[in-house]
Image 1 (cartoon, rainbow, N blue to C red):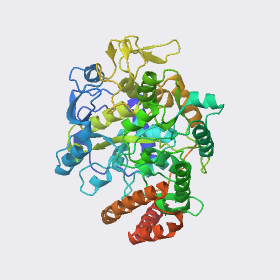
Image 2: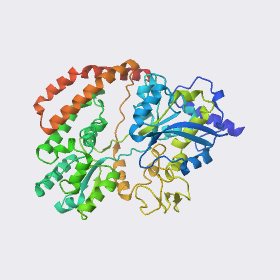
Image 3: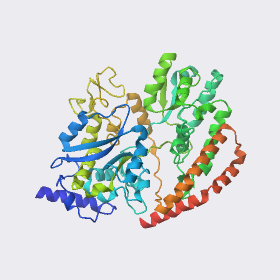
Image 4: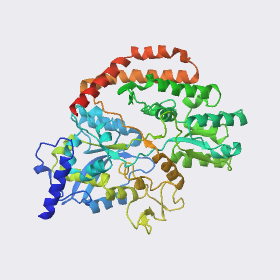
Length: 538
């Protein structure tokens, strides 16, 4: 009785500290299989066998196998059987849309990024998960301890609720930056560039030494020209994002207003910087149109020395390419160059997460399902299981209790000669189940080189979270009509300015063109939605 009372008090306390509305519907008929004393720190195990359907993003690098240890061990620990509806990675978003729209989606709909749930809210096809946080003590504990409320608030819709259970990071995790030929830096007596101005100086020196090259030739130009490069520069200039992460609005904390990203003076300065690189022969104009293979070939053949990168492509692409053409060459990913915004870490602490079909709410095992989700995706034990697997089989612990891969198991080249693979043979470290968490978990498979990169980035100031402006259904429909032509025009004009096809003396004409595509009306609608949200939550 005392244990049950303590559990009830814990749930009551969690509910009291939350501004989320409670579900007014009776759940007494939906508790079959649920634990009566489930709390943060508790291992979830259904009181009877239960099963839940899940939309499964079938990755070609580790295709789904029914005999994975992940499935059997998950059932052993939780008494839960997951029934995957497998969809190829290439078709995942389209298939998800069709299934949700037709009302045929599985109960669990993972691999959904913040904002992608907006489309399904008005139809009632997905659950308002914020109504049920009292069933998820691990999730609530993390939101509270990690001070994630500002990030969570960005998920809220006009009704004040949110419909996505996001992946949560304790610390921002930024991966994408630039890779630089460090042997060329050594040859020229140059340090790793710390700022974007330093990068310009480095590229000038490389061009002087190797005049027949474009020192910087970039990849990831499709489907958004300059996808990674524009985004890195945008956040360095204090904007919310550009390129493959184009954000229509950026919050100006000094004026307390939203600005249209592609119309700001900071966006213009960013384009002028790139135009200077192109004009002086430092940045390959084909960076915005070429394929990844073409960019890699130029790097491998010594036609360029700088390229966009993340941790994996340095190891899996660039170093093997160079080993074949120039074994003496060395290359490394550098910390994100610093721009006018200062030393910031631009990564969000929210990652892809899960929608839940509204049909699941009526299932007799609904409470057990929410407890299961809470344990697997938000508890330390569940996250360690999803990533590392089973102690003694896929990993071992050192004297300090830190997990390390078993010597006969490989993943991302950590034990390259091992006969077994953590993902392919066991089903762990699967992108459907393993993401988010504490830095030591997130960085568990990082090389010493990558951990050093993360140490530099984590010492920087996290980028400020912009305030929410949830649209109503009518506003969202209108926004969708305006956003595509606005984004397309920004993309087209940006490329023209960068490549010198359009003079910056015509910037005002470009701004007038945006106004003609409902730029002012869009910003007015954004501010109206923000003011409405602010007043409702003040």
